[in-house]
Length: 248
Ligand code: OAD
Picture 1 (cartoon, rainbow, N blue to C red):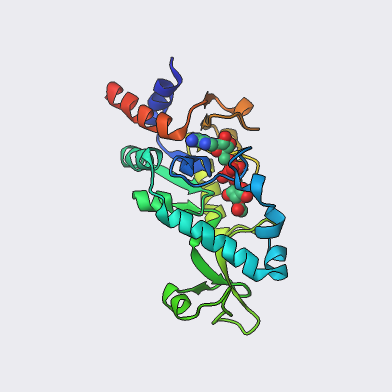
Picture 2: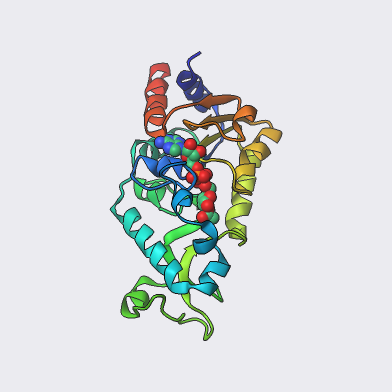
């Protein structure tokens, strides 16, 4: 069977679906991925200079400005056909959507209850207490970055998870429970190199789920997948929906 049709058929028959997305699903919205050889952020910048607590301690202004630049990119981007297709699929079959992306494009496309494992670039938090800092306060307190309103030693920082930091425990618990409960797991646009997110399809498989991957490149999980669709998400996902209609 053609892989798109097979995926559509599996999703139609599923009782509970887990979707795990990574930067690749937003690539067609014009947002740079991290590890793509030419265009990936990590081919141009060193993560240890920008996306670690140590980097922020060393040079908070540099890190703050880098995230401000990315926030600007994200604000100008629009959800694409793959984000929209996931909204549609969730209306047809119970779906838990777990993303490593901090761009909020799933939420802007209309996906409810997105589990954002790595936080959101639109949020700002206190570097000490991790409490939320609201946008109105930030607008009134320019600075690169301003001091935190929540703690004398704190600075405002992006509400994202950095290398070496723990994921929000509640989000991770919910994602792992969804992995154990699903019967179909679909990974889209992730290099599957960063754990614990990359472990979710394996957890689902050990609990009996069928696993499909959509990614133009092979990943460490490709050999373990029951189906690998080597296409861009913005092509594959609308095609899955079209094939779904054919079966209906
Ligand atoms: P990566 O940049 O590591 O991987 C992006 C993946 O998307 C690659 O496997 C590409 O082949 C694939 N890809 C590119 N274009 C695509 C398209 N149009 N359709 C489908 N797939 C496409 O991004 P992530 O796997 O999300 O963490 O990276 C995981 C984490 O590492 C990120 O959340 C971030 C990063 O460092 C933190 O910041 C904590």
